[in-house]
Structures are given as structure tokens and as C-alpha cells.
Image (cartoon, rainbow, N blue to C red; front, side, top):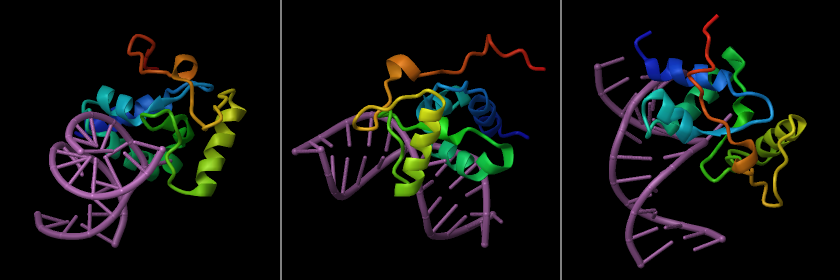
Length: 110
DNA sequence: CTCGTGACTCCCG
DNA sequence: TCGGGAGCCACGA
């Protein structure tokens, strides 16, 4: 496909290691568009089930889970804790401990 | 093709 | 702390 943004975004998301999290902005930035954060979310929403992407490892710029719904919010938190990501009292994620970013050097294709 | 939508982010007050 | 406005763009209908 010609949409490298979507391809990159999907690839990056699929490479997020367990116990780590990243933000829409970072993904979008590495995918080629700093303003593509929304598209990243959209791709997640649209392809998370199809491509089995770890959407729960993606949070907003504040290190918090996007309040798309009360249940979904709790569900995501549960998944993160299950992977070792402990949330603060405000359900805020400590980026100094859990922030992960795309590492092109790590990629070795297949 | 067009149109509406939004799991984002930044800025101002 | 919270709200409103703007920017940007892929996906689904």
C-alpha cells in the first residue's frame, strides 16, 4: 500500500513490548506525521481486532488512558497492570518507567 | 468520488 | 483544573 503512515503505525504498535506503553503522538511522529495521532487512534480502533494490535499499550500524551468509555478504560488498565504496568492514583502511567519508543535498530524484519 | 467522525495534541484564558 | 477552538488526516458508509 502507498499509505506508509498506516503501515508504519501498525508496525510500530505491533512492536510495543509487554510492560511498556507509548503515545499516539509518538507513533504518529515515527509514522511520519506529528498530527497523525488521531489517525493512529483510528487505525487502532479499526485494525486492533483485525491485526491483533496491543491497543491497550497506547495511551494519550498525558500518560493516561483515553476515556472512550468507563468500562473500556478499566479494561485497558487491567490489561496494563497484568503486564506489569502499574498506574498511579490518578491512573497516570510513569513514562520514566514505562515509556517505550520505536527502535528502528531493533527491527530485523523477518 | 464526497461527507462525517474522532481512542489526539497544542494553545489561550 | 477545565473548556473552547484549530489543525490534520485515515477509515467507513
